[in-house]
Each structure stands twice: as structure tokens, then as C-alpha cells.
Length: 132
Image 1 (cartoon, rainbow, N blue to C red):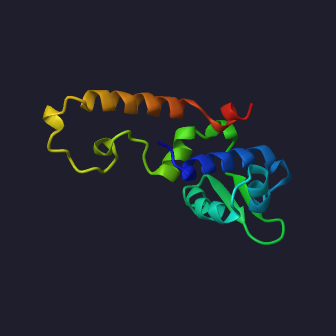
Image 2 (cartoon, helix red, strand yellow):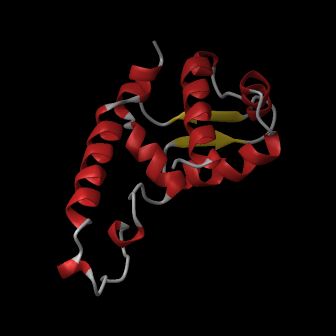
């Protein structure tokens, strides 16, 4: 399940994309338009900035901008930054310890298939696709 953090990050990115034509977008404006807590957005933005998805400046006229065009952001990329991974089960998460039962696990093929479908879907959609 995608957490609030991931859902809010996607909404923030979409709002910035839709409103950055006049320069940097103040987070207070995003928070107001999206009806989100500014304090919570301030916890999400460092991850987006650190991973190069947005750039920000402080002070008068400050705010955030996308670093690329909306068509160049895969939804999966944004979700992975905020969720760390999208694996449906912990044994498929990146960096997970090798499961001792993997060789006799009757469900691993199912979970791997689900993981592939989810990955393919979120990586096939871009911010631009959601801006219609």
C-alpha cells in the first residue's frame, strides 16, 4: 500500500508542475491548494530535493521548481523516493536478506509477478500523463 507520504509527494509534484510557469512555487501555496499540512510537506520536500526531483530556493520569491519537464518524471521514480520500495512483500524489497524458504516457497512466483506488474505500471506513467 502506498503511504500518505508517497501520495502527498505525488500531489506536490503535480501541483508544482502545474504552477511553476511564474517561477518558484511557494510551499504554503501548494499546501493551501492541496489542503495539506505545510509541516508535513516540509518533511517530504528534503527527499525530493536530495534526489534531484525538485530544486528550491529560500527567501522572497522562493519556493520549489521541477528539475525536468513533467514528461520526464516516471511516477515510479517519485514513489520510490518517498516509499523506498514498492515491493508487495518484504522478501522482494531491495536489500532484503535472502529468505531461507525461497527455494520451497509456493507463492514467490505470484509475488514476483505482482511486483513486475506494479513496477511496469508505475514506470509507464509520467507526471505529464496525470496532468490532463
